Amino acid sequence: MLQPPHSSLQVAAVPTQRVPARDRDQDAPWHTEAVCRRDEAGLFFAPSKEPTAARLSREEAAKRVCARCPVMVECREHALLQPEPYGVWGGLTAAERRVVLARRRRREMELKKAAGATANRLAG
Image (tube, rainbow, N blue to C red):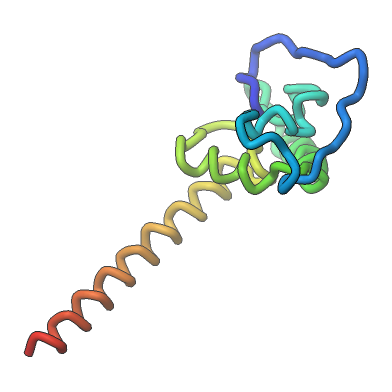
């Protein structure tokens, strides 16, 4: 989702035409093609003190919007690189993004260890 929880929505009067990622203008920001630009921001961000059942339902609805988005991968990477602490971005909740980031860190550590072991074997 591209807007903070309390920003006003911008609604286009005419629906935009979908352009395949490979044909999109490379100078245009990825988020100009985001499907969530036309959806209710509240779907992607939790209201304060939201009951668990309501949160899970809202997050699933947001993920369904993300699933049909042509820039879902770009959105997810943005949220992982920032990292975005709130909301559903790229089809992942904040908790799911934390898991992905932890796995990436763990994998990077494993790769560094393996590279170091290989370098030691070759040097020795």
